[in-house]
Image (tube, rainbow, N blue to C red):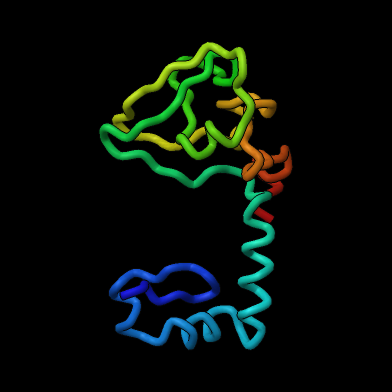
Length: 129
């Protein structure tokens, strides 16, 4: 059986236990369809990658893009950026997160096309206002 979908996103098996469309409308308002479309369209411009690693996940280190030897990106971000001619290592993680989009860990030239990076305003006390 095909997985149920809401706004083009496959829903987990337990999603049938509640009315996902009703919850979407309750959380996002009557224009929830338009909000989802806007979120999907803007998703390509997200600041940082949200991937959190578990033990033994695969990640990539790039000597030219990583700020230090501990910096790495997930496979999706790695293959979404240009690392041609760079010195690369495939690594196994113990914990942490993908550094794509974080200019304090990864050079902006190495960001994938989905993550634009954190701006100075987003990475300061100004973001708390």
